[in-house]
Length: 162
Image 1 (cartoon, rainbow, N blue to C red):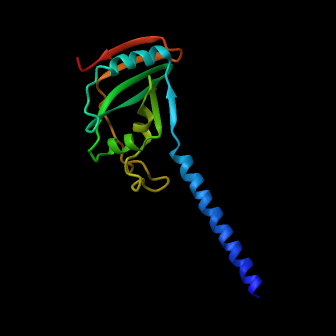
Image 2 (image 1 turned 90 degrees about the vertical axis):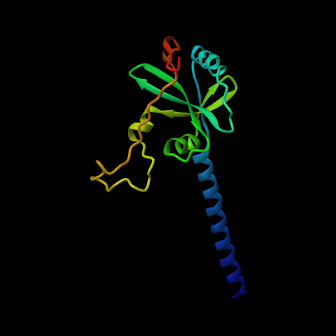
Image 3 (image 1 turned 120 degrees about the vertical axis):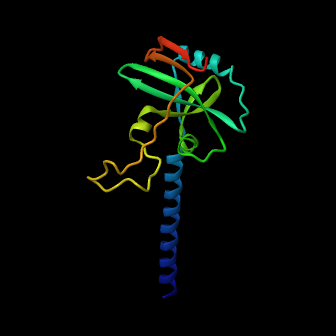
């Protein structure tokens, strides 16, 4: 009888341990960073422009947005305030996508994040009745941007802050 209890206890511990290991693997997979490496011509232009930024990184930091229209990409450099508790800042801080420029990594958001993402994951409406129930976020992007094609040919660059 005692041996049966030990076997049952061992099975329960084994199942619990496998469950905990499985949860750990799942949580690590979700948090894994996705690194985006842009064409060299684009990265050099971004690096040159970012070197002009004189930010107090305790308060203000850089993030990137990537838009795609057909075969043309637009990368915009923007800043956000670290201490703000708004939807955009939470998305930036929670992003696992990072754009690599020289040796630095910057949080990266996509245009479709704003089209289909919702900052309020608790209010999404019911299946078949979501229209008008989902809160969307709109951001007016301003600052330096560069337009390019997939091979890295620069089509346009512009600094809206000038």
